[in-house]
Amino acid sequence: MITLKVEGMTCMGCVRSVEKAVGRADPGARVEIDLPSGKVAIDSATPRETFVAAIEDAGYDVAA
Image (cartoon, rainbow, N blue to C red; front, side):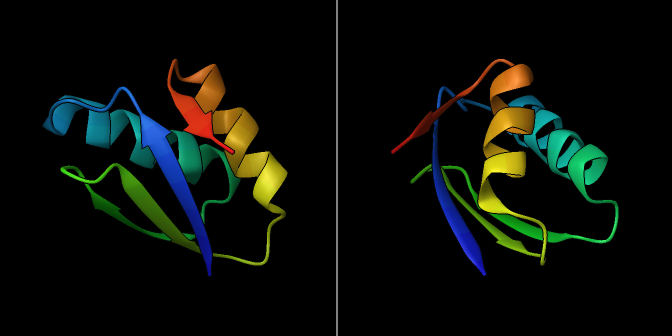
């Protein structure tokens, strides 16, 4: 399980954008997003860095 802190998500549209970014990086990944905390949990064997890059490419910041 990969847990990321994503900054800049403010609405359900943002949640969908992050879900799509994760899905493009790994179509089989399961993702759970908690909008108030900005936490994104991803169940995948794909490396963390792949998801960080995909989410950042979608316009969001991923905290270290």
